[in-house]
Image 1: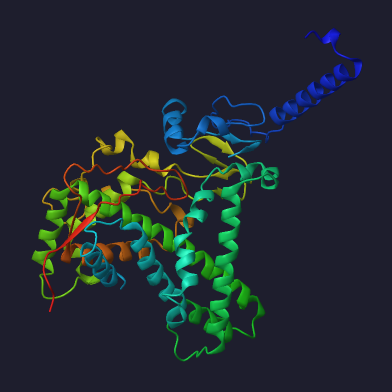
Image 2: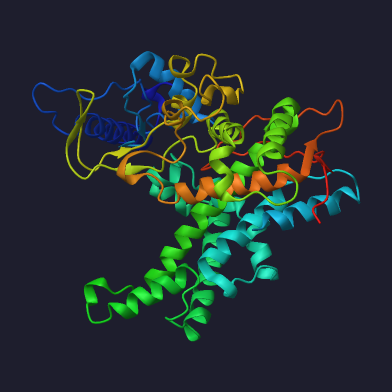
Length: 435
């Protein structure tokens, strides 16, 4: 219909809407931080007005950004909206129990529960209710947090979206509220019988710190801050370790030769008369190289947690203004052919020295999973220890496999941590008994 055929009121509405859109578009395009002379802004692919690159990134932003970097370089700018952007023993027994029943199982849920118990014991000590219905319910619904907490969630850049119906966001909010209530209740119970002469967990250490510095209010940690600290520690450590072990089991069942080499190393170094210990780690380089290759190949933490610049700075000659959201595409670094040669191939040997007896330190430091610099994950060391112990204890006693003809789907689903498709056909065979 021609504009002249519309009623005057409709034509005025259309013209007014067009004028507002043009004004907003002009403001968005012209309001940019002033770039100092001699510097330039990072290159930016074409993006949709107002929406930016939200539609371009799709369901696998780590892959799309990797492809864009091949064209625009290692530092590029995108816009989203208008903003630039020692339960292993229990697990072993559980797997044997499942094999005596249906003869196959999906290990993920059991790994989740075991890792939650370890992190819970570290944070809460004897106050952690391992088998309570409340805890099991929280563990089972933890994916609701991961689903909505990934880098680049539209709600982070379009706050108005939080008022629209969003089932995933509602599940995220519900899980956060339930988990915070659980942590708050457990911290309060812990405080009632706290003994500073017998500190056995993280909460106890925080309480003791507060008592020792009670006269210096600036160093006092309130109970609410303690709740928030423990909340962060539990959530961060729990999901990362769970996902690492789950991916490891999938790589083991599709690479039986690699699994046998790890078990031969365990038999040679640890033997069958005792369980593996953390002190065995330096003498188990092939197991360590397998863990590193799992981190690299899966890259299950595709991006670092988004950070914000505290002041104007430069990177590779590009100007980065204050309060700019920045993150690293860890998946791209871990799949860069220039660094790895054959990044799509799962090959633990790439992390061993030429004689195969030790880890190649230079190669191992190229893997990105826990971030980098001063703001890297503070729980990295603990996470590496836990993954090592879980896998060492499980692989010493069990052999994992899937029935002939069953294909394991390693296609990752994007999220804060990327998960592989469920696999309900895992089998575990006991290698030997420890008396």
